[in-house]
Length: 546
Image (cartoon, rainbow, N blue to C red; front, side):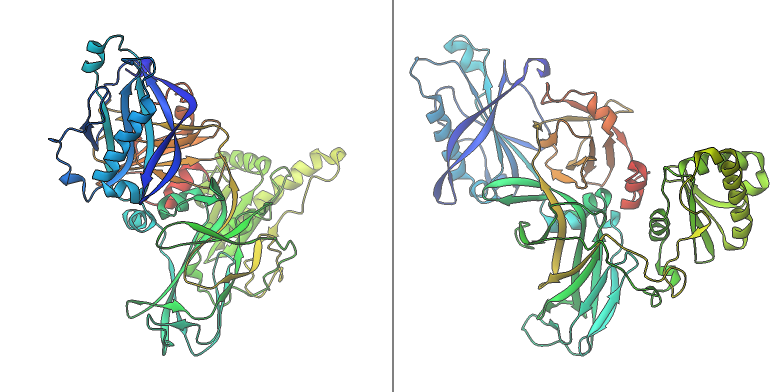
């Protein structure tokens, strides 16, 4: 069947009765010789050739409380008479289905028409399937997704705040939150007395985003766009387990992940998952965080990731350069490519020196050693630098000064370290999810109904819960019903599949690219079981080198 199916690029206009009013929508038409495909998590509702009839023996009671994520309408192109109005018949069938299943009108699932072209006689046409294929599954809204992926997520930061005082909170990412006096009230609007817990979390790369469950689409003037994020955050508050509300806006100086043009600041509606644009963002390229901003943060609260990011900002990979930072009794090095390659050769020669390396990440040219061994490593790397310099004097300046301590601003070193990615004064009037994003439209979008198989066994993967598409050319991730996903044909796509029991499968970008999905809308995804390797967003980030 897969070889006989061809997607038609024009649109078929239909009229749907949605939530008591008539509106127009457009769905794609897919042409097949004869439809005989089956997928997990589907319910079949048969009709008859040439009739709007839906079989009265079909038991729809089990569908009442299910989430209908996608609907396929299957029919034949063969006509009894030349003037037969197939579109009108399809509209009648769809209206009857919507009348029977109210949740279709409320949830507005995606639709597709599947036109069978193989029948040449009435007798043939009557042997073909006619009717609906309903693709059902779990609700994929933000709340349910966040709960499903909770074990994969980074733990949020929780801080005690005295509501009677103005408070400034500083986080290891470089973000600062200013909270005015009596800013927080209970559900009845009464000011909170005493301390409450402020819970704050950032989503900085596509791995964080995919496990957040946060929707990454934005609709403006009837047009749907995708987000490419330069950083998102969620901020909430509670006291004794009771959710609190903001009575006064709080101000956030957010350290974004990148400086880009045309970035907007958005707030998500907790109930609908829809985004509202608040304002455009202008990056302050002279923004600074004063020296000593980490004085109130315990060393054990700052992870390797932040320290490494801080050092990376001090190294130009095209130069013969290196930098380090001392933190929590360790020295963290980032080397430029040439420096790192030379130092690896030195480690190959000196097993004693190699044995003093606590950890190494070749993808980012990082070394971690105990602080007590820092002087020895500085000497070894410095000798490489001097040797390279002496051999290349005729080339002039080799790059930036080396032996640079990329301080974490604990009151010494380069006080006033520049943070060009800092966005000052983001006004957050309510608790919730906020996003700093560019928006874009997919140039060549393709809707797919894949078959998922385990690459090791060749067996179909069962109990599918959600499929996530990560286009690595952007910073975002998108969740779909496994039976109907949308991808950017020209993107660098990674597909993740999660089962109901949280088994995790992945199709990498190289394997996806070989499938030629622009010519085949029903591909077979041979997925690698990554359940043991992917336990967290950090695991995914390191695997994909985000």
